[in-house]
Amino acid sequence: MTRDDVVEVLLGCLSVLAQEEPDRFKLDLSEETILFGYDAGLDSLGLVMLLLSVEEALHARHGVSVPLMDERALSQRHSPFRTVRTLTDYIIANFG
Amino acid sequence: MSFTADAEVVVITGTRKGIGRSLAEHFLKRGATVIGCSREPTDLRAGGYEHHCVDVSNEQQVRQLFAAVWKQHGRLDILINNAGIAAMNHALLTPGSTVERIFATNFLGTFLCCREGARLMQRNRHGRIINIGTVAVPMRLEGELVYAASKSAVITLTQILARELAPFNITVNAVGVTPVETDLIRSVPKEKIDRIIEGLAIKRLGRPEDVANVIDFFVRRESDYVTGQTVYLGGM
Image 1 (cartoon, each protein chain N blue to C red):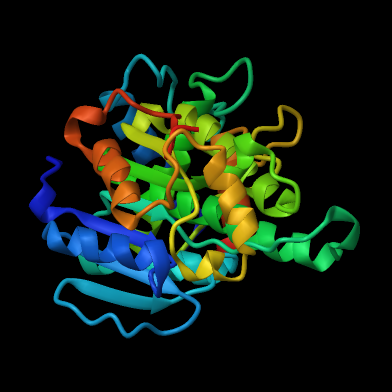
Image 2: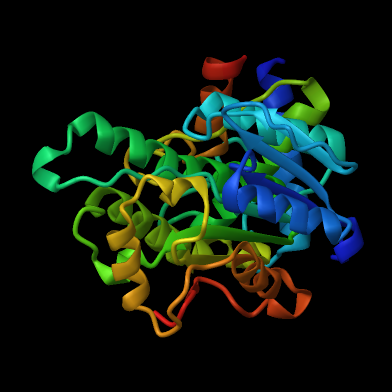
């Protein structure tokens, strides 16, 4: 599983969720997309939905179990899930 | 996904004996597929029943259990967190290790199963989680501090988790059970049980079917507007 694979899965999940729940997911799709915080285009429940969707997609497409749980998940300053880029880095560092 | 009683997949923890076993048999009679677990093997053999040896306080084992449920059935409709342990003692005589052990099974075990179960349920945007509480919480019984506190934590978990899971159409409720004639209370002195029963409006021991009756209500399709509630048996 490469970094590009993870980015593709992440953006793919975001795209699907944005179609399913356009009121909750109001964001542009790129590695710089902010996923958590006051300036994010989704709320904390949206982040939970995204992470669950990413776990499922990574398992289905790449056969890897990626439990995205972290005590800093909802920390404004230290969340590893703050942007698509930091979330990708987190997944590669811990499960790549 | 539609929710029909004859197709329901149910996970019940602590099914080797007592209330858990009765609930497993109850749901089997309803035609459900029941996945039960306990630390030790069971002698329950029935079509539609699968048993896993799992310590619910072991995160890895719990994850494996629910991964197996998804792999085998591709859905989870109902989770009943029944596994629990109790110990009676005066606070001044209670070792810290007892507190850790009881909270590990009663609270951590319930949390882990709720988390993993809800992760499966949210995929189908449907689910019912039932936790088991106790009348020892509102009765504030002396000698049951640790057990009651652990179940009090389960009730708080139920109330907050209900809010967190509502967007996924998953309800979370609890049954506050009275003493039921099971192994769990055989070591409790009779005068203690009598005192609990004296504090109830309906003065008798609970029966497994009393518990099942409330759970049947919580899992009904029509109960999708009922969440975060604890129903105490016996008129607490």
